[in-house]
Image 1 (cartoon, helix red, strand yellow):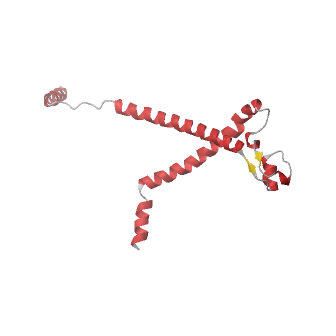
Image 2: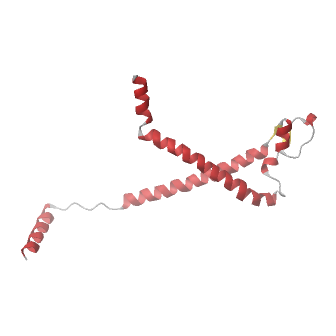
Image 3: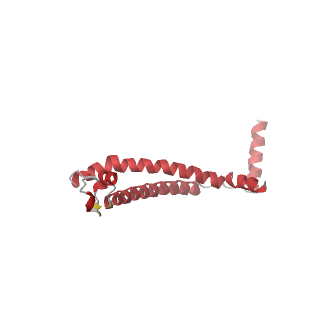
Length: 142
């Protein structure tokens, strides 16, 4: 029974919950970036590659099963291919995600720096405290 209790305490610690939230948000962020690359950036890059999708760049390793035009056709026919275009696509996704994370960390560091720079209110000296009390008492007596 102590194993279950220990696991529950571990799972409910703040760091574990923060990590879980980070993983979930990271997965969703990855989907957003993949959509950005596939649906917005790659069509512009496709203009320079004569309309060919990066995922369609591959080399057929087994030509005995016929010739194919797209990677999807090759996979459907079970033909062994070297899909270097999909790898290039993944590298582009990674670079964009890394850049976005860099911008996010830079922004968070800037916010933390502003909080550090804000001066804390100075503690009043004993003499200033006494003068403040005298001032307050004079205001009351008027």
